[in-house]
Length: 493
Image 1 (cartoon, rainbow, N blue to C red):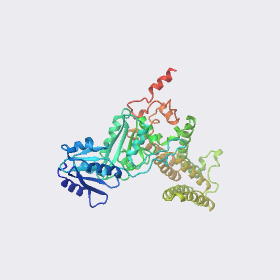
Image 2: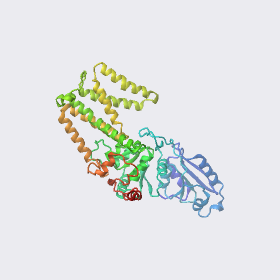
Image 3: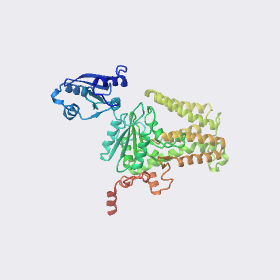
Image 4: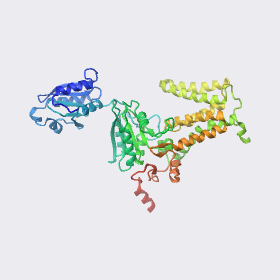
């Protein structure tokens, strides 16, 4: 719908469509510009008061001969001394802009509105993410404002080919979703696929931000498959590294988590700490993390098998298994132990910070100790449940940690019921599910399946920066070399 030349008609439309006078935070301010009636339409709480007051004062001082004819153009050319200015010719454009934060200037006799981006989002200062802490390195993290997040990335990548394309998602929420990539590195087909899927989202809103977007754009064949096919990060340095490799980021306004696409299983086992230390230390950290996750996944079901079926144990491992099984069956002990850890974790989330430490002590020490003393649990059950829990959260990816936890509980149950055939069958099913999972047509187990020995070596062994000069092949990057000139110099030595 085109704007009318009559200010009164435009205001009537906007009062009806935006609820001006009904909702307290949608406001209009009428005044005169060079003898002409004018009005500002805006959302209270978004605009910067000082800048808006200065602009309003300058508009009121404008003389008629300074802006006629071509009122709008002359205001844009010199009268309005502000950087972020645009025009809108339709009612829908003005409404979309106002609801996003900028204010609209309407002048009687003009069919074009001036959009002034004087918004200021409420938000917090960048700080280090709790999940991805490092002992050395930058302490800033993404926040809930997408514009601030793009700035944090641009501070690290001053590449003119870095692109942030904004897409509106949600019929009612009109949420800002930014697709971020480096134009001459990222695969064009991947970029177009992600953008098309975002543009085809048909829903009222995405109040849960990035998680809602993920469920719309991923191509999971099995929705109950818990293994995540995207990775989230709240660290700008991690996001920048993935952009340089050829990944695409999806950033949703109101969320500090940035989505990395596509990813493999091994991406969930990497951490920034490995690259903030010497190479040998980084390799050690990575291998310990891999070992911890493997122990978390395999140790409880294996112990259940040997505890319930000691005949499978060789004679030199006969000590494995509870000497005092306890009054509760071993299988039920493990299930109760896993549920108890989850209950403590969820209670910790909702517990005020000053009491969180006390809650952890009560849950981890007192309850476990009392359960053993009264004979309900075997000491080994507490030990292996604790080791599994520690191994689970050695990965910075919470989604992957929860997936490992769910499959571990399933393996424990079917091993306890069906014995060795349950363990073998459960492992086979889990391997098939992981092997057939894909993230935007990328095999989840790459470079293990399909096998790429050179890439697998770089995944398992953290590479020093001068050696890591090739971008991952599965991303099909336009520019496969990240440091071709440096590699030539090394060969020439």
